[in-house]
Length: 173
Length: 199
Image 1 (cartoon, chains in turn brown, green):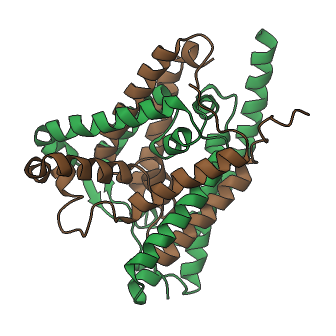
Image 2 (image 1 turned 180 degrees about the horizontal axis):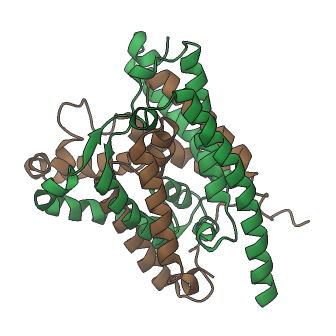
């Protein structure tokens, strides 16, 4: 076997139970679960605040993350996502999967892939403002505490995903 | 009694350290599952690799059962935990659009962090897209006020909504999950045979 081969992926059920235990710990300590998009909201709010403080405070999108807090980046979900980045980096190196590359299907150019990735990010961040959370903060954490909205969101993500997937078949496979 | 944060004087710095460690473990799990790779994650939507479904639902079922039993035995006070508020239509329509974004990007906000920090440049494009999406939202927020809070039913839970016993509902969901896991395995086998047969 080639020594440079990436290590195999973990069994998804082991990963799932691991993340589930993590959510339980998080609820035991802080009374809330995990999150992700909130960190981007906080980061964006503090960035805008640095360059245009008055403007940032005039928009609810940003001011929610600025008003009445010590510092927008000294926030639970921001630090948690910083941890996700560090944990991902360490794990990627240990699993020999760290590599500068563009992940894409064989049929499309790098540029096309980056444009799709950009649009996907745009749609998700915009939509997450309506849903009040993403796959981590709403589906995973909210699903665990049986929030009706979390389950509606999850089902809708699958419906949306499957309904566009056939159009995107050539892009991925 | 848990949540510890509300019942004991825990210094803020310690909570942030806990946030960092929790996040590191989360990031490690996501990476080990292969979710830093958009092409692997998105196979969920072509039925060839249902890892996303398996991880998501086994995590939810584990956490759901753990939280239920911890509250049943009086370790965790369920009235003190955060239950995501439900906004029926924003979450349905937002969810569908989020699903479009998920398949376009191949990553979600959390997994895009793992992608970026394992060197995947498409993850950076997802980051840029998310920041642009937030700017667009900020510019349009005034037009959306009515839409955003439409059909809000507050922070009730499914068992309150359905007037069910909490424990009965967790048991039912766990049973459904077991059938769904079995079914996911069957679907994967079938679609992998189909795709290897046609190529």
